[in-house]
Image (cartoon, rainbow, N blue to C red; front, side):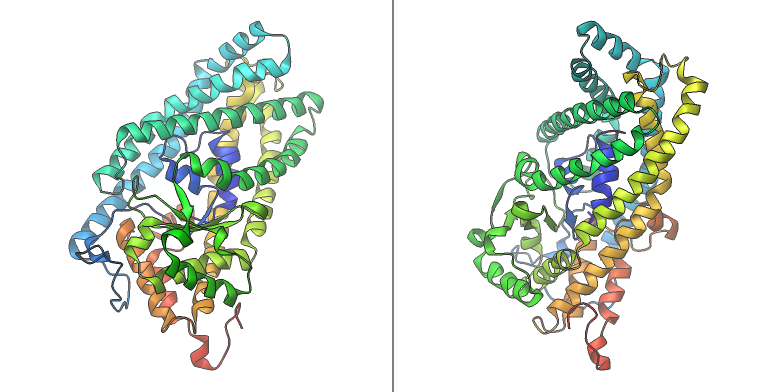
Length: 459
């Protein structure tokens, strides 16, 4: 999973809750991750090589490059091939769902029901939004089911189907609430200002994004996972992390460090930063604690500290807000032409008609897909900076911090079945983090101290 504050806006606010992104129908682990800053980028199965037979944390095997046992490498390459195909298919399928909704005239039908229910606009939105959200999500449910089946097949998930569907239902509740809010705001500004609605809606997204980021760790995360104070679960690790926090010059007390019970649903590893103000916290997954030793976990959290110290949260929000500006403006410029050409065939009266929502979402989805390489390039950049910060802040605290970081990445790649040699175009388009081989190479070769220099971020 990634820093994704770009994705927080484009994927959750626009693509997930407006345009039906791949987040719909997936496990709560991934839904939650969309608004968090995380260390890894893929889900994965727990490798035998990552732990001892007694289940102790990972050993400190010397790493020279990304290396998997032969059977794990074969499995990782097979999964990478499947993932490449399914990613492209699901991207097209997501667009097809919106096209089908338009072709079947579902939105005009739901609009008519809403208008018969009440003459009040806000009541109409309250009726229409859940119906259109559920229609999109049910149509996209097969891809979510397939993804979970694939995760279970490759040992990437240990979540039972009953638990998965319960998480899906809770995700649907969040999706419906978000869709109601978005529909109310969007069509209020469209009717108020037909020429500048895109600008006013763009302005309205900022408080929505900030509220989402603030409440996610307080309200959304606990709906899907159990959280406990890290100090109560692992006081020794908490003490080591406090040294790291002091070295970074930050003020994150033990009360802001949490243990998350991810292991009952997934075998993937992660730690992440999330929230701001009173909701700001560091979260370490129980799977990470089980499969990494203390120095490796300290590096992982050092990476997360980098997101705070380097202000990636606010930089990400600013970047995403700029991306939304372009997306909404282009949507405004194109929607008139789309409705003039196909609106009557789809049963859409005008842009201010609630039935125009799927057409708007189709445009936003296409624009988001086109712009995805830009967002992911930005995400990879700040993730690389966080890797660098993690190396610098642990230098002196951990013997041979570069080797420890390489071990952490190798464990992550092994657990996640990360592709040893992903196609460059695929990395550019879809990877929110640098690839595991790239991260290991950098960890092993970044050594300004050996040349008599200080680090760039930690002097």
